[in-house]
Structures are given as C-alpha cells and as structure tokens.
Length: 363
Image (cartoon, rainbow, N blue to C red; front, side, top):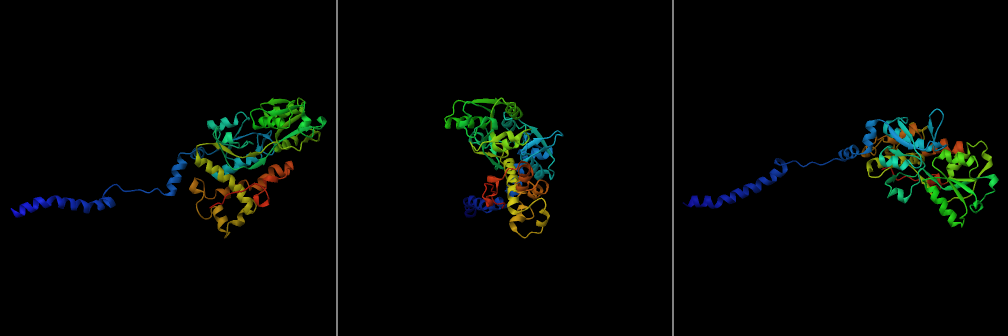
C-alpha cells in the first residue's frame, strides 16, 4: 500500500522531470533545425528578384540614349554610336558581360525618355537627363552619380548682336519642349524682367537646331555642352556665339527606375568605378601593371582581394573589366568631349583637382 501510494503520487513529478530533461535535447537536435542565411545567399536572393537578373539572362543591356548630340550620344551614318553617355552604357555592359558591345541602344526623345524607364522599355537611361527633385521623387526615377556637371546656356547668331539675356528682348528663342530647359528659360527671363520674347518650341533636338539655322529664331537654349557640340557641326560655326550666361544647374548622369535597389546599386557603383579608376591612376593602357600591386585599396577595387562585386551580384573584377574595355573617366572625357569639342573639364575634374567628381571608398 505504501509503495502503491508513493508510485501514484510521485509519477507526475517523474514525467515532468523527464520532459524538462528532454526539452533542451529536442531543441538542440531533435526538433526543426534552425538555418542561417549567409551573405552570399542573401545577395543571390536579391539579384534573382531584380532587373539585374533579367539583364544577365537576356545577355544584353538595353540603354536609352539621345543619339543626336555629338560628344554625348551620336549615331553616325553607319549606325555606330559614340559619346560619353554611350561609353557609360558600354561600361555597364563591360562590367556585366566582359564585353562592351553587348548593348542595344534605343533613341529616345525628351518626351519619351522617362516613360521608357518607368515602363521597363529600357534598363537604364544615359540621355543628358537632369537630376531634379520632382524626377527623383514624384516621377519615380533613381539617379546614379553625376557624370557631367553642366548648366543651361544660350547661343545666338552674331547678327543678332546679343550678349546678355536682356539683349534678347523682342527676339525669338528656340527651346526643346518637355524639358527643364523650357521652365529655366521662363524663370530666368522673368528674373531679368524680360517679358517680351517669343519661345519657339520643338519636340525634337534635330528639329530644334534646324529651326535655329533656318532663321526661325535668333537664339537657341540648351545645356552649354550641347550648344558647343551642335555648333561644332554647323556649316558656318563662327557665325554663332555662346553667351556668357549660365541659367541653371544641370547634373547629368545615368537613370534607372525607382524600387529596385539591387540594380540601382550595380549602376551606381559601376559609375563610381570609372571615377575611382582615374583617381587611382589606372588606365586602359596601364591596367596590367597593377596586377601585382600591394596597395590593399587597389586590390579590393580590382577584385584581386575581397568580394565586393559578388556581394552585389557583379563579378569581383567588374571594375577591371570596365577599365580594360572602356577606360577611366578621364579617358572617356578626353576621347568624346575634350579632344573633339575642345571643352575644358572645369567642374568635371576630380575632387583632387578642384572639381566635383568624387567616389566613396571601395571597401
């Protein structure tokens, strides 16, 4: 009787003790195993849901350009594209495919360009597009680092006798529709107290300059770099003068659609790579000499050490690929703008030379 009573009263305590002893064992080995996601797995997951994965699978980059501005993006009679904007497209293709030719170019008008990004018609826009607050927020664009700092100017015929904005009172000014240029012109004329002028609006860049050369307007306004580029191919370029007027800030660079941080990061750091390469003094001509460098910063940059590229879905040597096939920023600028157009770099110098070009650290 004593033994039976003890057994009955103690049995619940034995069961409880057993459960307590087994519970940690179950948590450690017998239950559902806990899993930890590695950085590489996280990166792969992000890339798989990004436009970056689509581009890799497609095997080509679709890049929106202007195609009508020498020095920036211009297509010749043989269908060959060239210019600073074009080289930025080629840099992305070089980084992704080790081949700068894997680009499909889409010529876009000023009215078409942002819609083409929003709709996904193009992967990236490199089309002298100004970074503004409304485009960055309400319109849904994401701007990569600026590759050309510009400002709006005015070109007039020498026959007009114009040297200032006030000299254009009562005269006609050609301007491209659907751009910040149109608003800037109105703002600056109002600021100068000039209300008596006639804007002649065009929907196409070629039509804009055709109207100007045909005498339908005595002046034309656009980014100063574009005015220099277009004047360079005028039959009588000495008959035209670019006024000493800067009406706005025009930071120009690559643009992608908002909402895809993985693709945006790739374009952003590819852009920074051409700038950082110049700061390091690495060119397409001397790249091979850096293969044995002992500088840890350069080793990380070129993908010799660390996995900076892999961490965002790019090859670790993406920067080296860009330099090899396209060159650094200085080479790109000189090839497309400096040598053919004679346009000094000015604000487009590296920060170390008093300019605005600056890359965050590659680490």
